[in-house]
Amino acid sequence: MRRRRVWLILGAAVLIGGGVLCFVVLRPEPVSDRQQILQLIADVERAVEQQRVSALMAHISEDYEDSHGYNRRTVQRLVVAAARDARTMDLSVQCPEISVQGDTASFVAEVDYSLDSTVERGSTTHLTVRGWLRREGRRWRVVRAEGWQGAGASLL
Image 1 (cartoon, rainbow, N blue to C red):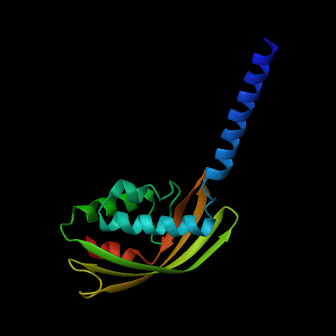
Image 2: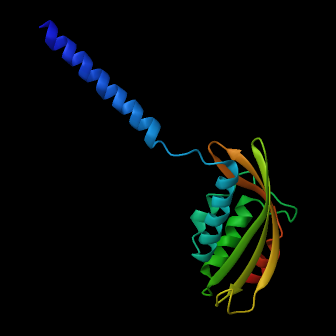
Image 3: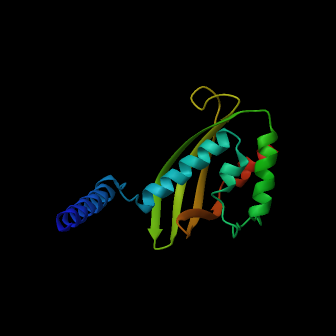
């Protein structure tokens, strides 16, 4: 009886130890704030190209407000109207500048876009977009962006 108890305890210790080891070894590397912000920008680019309103709006804070008077609701209306447009949009986004200070961040993105053709083949429009983000829970969300508004108006 005593020998069985020792084997049970030893087996449980091996299982627990193996579980802890797997958790430590297989746990993904933490993603830096910079990498998270670059992923957000890539996700927004993809959502715009695929005309996926909800995917884009998932990255916009409820508190969004910019110097043109747009809030989250007006941005959503613009995005929905643009998604109804039959033209396709191709974007090329470069993000040379990202700055993170605690739970806030900012970025500068150089954006070239083309309607109904790829950026490489068609005539493009260039925008410099400046964005401000805030960490909301575990995610970064855009609370303000400047420089995109002209493109939004041209799509409507």
